[in-house]
Image 1 (cartoon, helix red, strand yellow):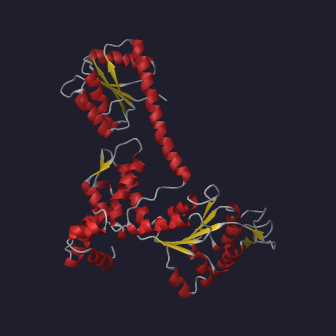
Image 2 (cartoon, one colour):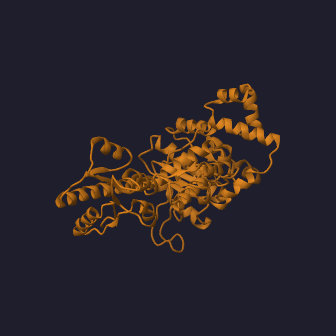
Image 3 (cartoon, helix red, strand yellow):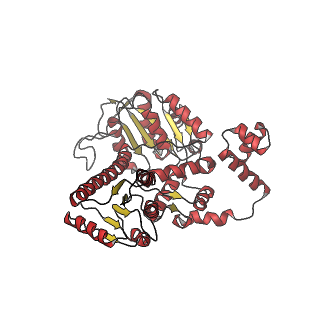
Length: 439
């Protein structure tokens, strides 16, 4: 792999000399004696390295450096000058240059220097890639919130993490139920043991029993060998049963047996097997309604409901939206320095987020793929998010205005006492209004 290199110097003799030197080591650089053309060049093509002369007209090297770092932050920039001083070297590095090369330099010195800069660039790129790979392999993410309800539920999760008690996590799709399940597992005594996830809604009912409890050879058509189930794989650790409300009543009965006696049977087998598994269940449905309808067993509900964690949707956590926006910007930016314009952030803040945190994460990731400059702008956002601008411009009632104003104050205040002082009301009145407006 050879680097893509840009060289900018308004002295054509020096420019050609550098070009010949680089070509001798297999690098075909892009040479330009016009610093004003650099912005167009970096927008057309990605350069790994850029060698930029300090003293040029009509733009000097520091101005060119600023443009490269703004629009191609992953490019490693070296400033060249025949007027080198310690001050200018320090200034260049403070503004984003990797190193400083003083002219004149000989052929061998330049070759050695280019090799070192290229090694540095590749190492930096590898670190970024490894960080992304490590994040995807670990399967866990940080729970990012300053919402009081979410923090209270996180505290509850922390307190029960070291026990073996069953936990039921309720919340809409995308609110972070699996993150909380991972948090409970990782902070308990079973952290070094398996964490096995099962999406009960994604597996056909006729296969789910075998998936959960395993089967023996010949127990049904296609069962050509013995197979371990998810409970067996999770022995000693934690099993996370997502969308638990989708289980059939027959599977619910078998799950109840595991909770009561810690034993199960493989499909086609009559010998009970013992298992030591902590069960964390999650649902985006209202289990109280499922109990009334008779689609969920009451005895299983009481077994699972030993600890109940309820996660509010993102629309009830407006103070978390900006926090999450900047968390995902950092997560997806890699080596680039991508920011978000105030107009785009405002659109994200007023959107309803029916898909909750997962939908917001997808919107930021999509925008990061579309942005070609230094900031995400409204045109980079999904159409339904951009439509929030029109929806937000509709005339509001006094009650809606009061609700929005209280929400904004709650987003910025450090606690309820400070929010009450800003609003000019007492703390009790604020809490009553918060409850009334469902904030």
